[in-house]
Image (cartoon, rainbow, N blue to C red; front, side):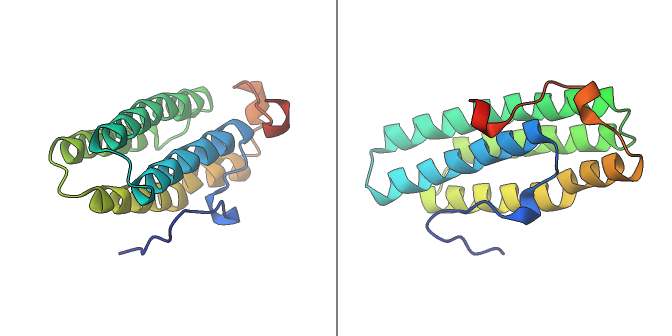
Length: 147
């Protein structure tokens, strides 16, 4: 089990060197942190559930974004990776319906983010690097400083 500090900080190990995906990961991390900060401030259960809804919707968007990139670059592990996304969203929905404490839910989010980013998503980086793929040919590029 990965222990979670108050909030997560962006680390190089989360980076996959696709600007758009890295930015989306940073935003996802910030949503997880906003959930933790709302918990720490004693926000109402309704407020915490609304943040969970936002996280769920953002995860769905992010997974579609990642999958579009994988299809565009002919990523050979697309089917398995897409299945993992579906599995994660199903788990998130199940946990959301049966929350046995917001701290446990936060721990799930932290573990999900770290595990999925450093194990599954890093494979996309390796594929792009191994085949010298210029991802800018396949997807719009977002730079953090242009937002």
